[in-house]
Image (tube, rainbow, N blue to C red):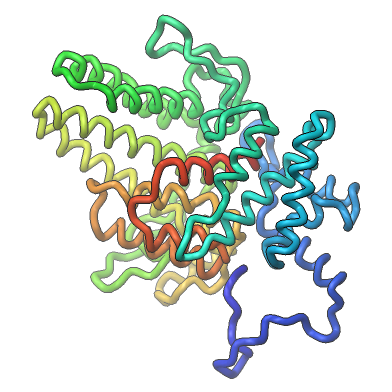
Length: 407
């Protein structure tokens, strides 16, 4: 959970015990309300964005305080005994093919995974990978975030066309008429990345280059085709500083977004675009095209700057107030909802691992991850801040759990 703050007027941290006037039952209710505030989000316009854990609060009140679903959010504040109890209940439910389809079961599986993500410590990976597999079993798909895009199919016999069935978790109704959605861009990149791993001949690299450059064009088309409501808007500017940059104060613009879902989508897009540029760089190097590699570095750092411009939006509780106090140069004083840090965590980590992103930006991204871990209580962020070279499977299973909240 978020860090404790000293008792006013002292440097003494309060004990991690319930006040005498608060009963365990009252504490559970307060924990539940805090969880709903920090992690649940309802879109004001479902045609433009999606909510997060939509329906969870309503289902919670309908099922009652003793249900497995109500116990699950308490994991973020309580201990492993409750976790083991819920784990056993979930295993029994998965074995029952009738109840395994219930919305409660999917929520419980997702929340158990979220518990492991928040509970990851600096010395180990946690067990969220197992929960990603359990969640995948309930949803009848593979334990990968790409499997959540069941609405897109790569058309047979075509490298760049798709069959669009309906909008996916990274696409919204207002834009479902467009031929290429973000879901597709991720799927297509995965196909080309896999192809690059087995490409050895010069001829094959030239063919692969044609494919990746075609995909780069589609990425640019996606970016420029966003309607005005869904584009980031500059709301302020942080002056250039040569001193150590505090979290939230990266020099340059500060952007505001329609809502946290839209902000998250933009950072998924930016992360995927950075990975595509990494692939373009790899192909160019194999073809001896050093000039093209320099262009990739320039593009990548512009994208990274756009990602950093979204940090205050994700991490502050009142962006307008934060911008009005920029001249003070203080640290973020009003921490935002934990959902913002949760959605920002993996994009920051992936970008921080790319060698063509400027060292100073990568260091700042790791600082942001450490801040999310300390101030928002998301243990995996602390782990990622201190751990380079984390494997793809670890990151994918985390994204699988987090993105499933948009379903």
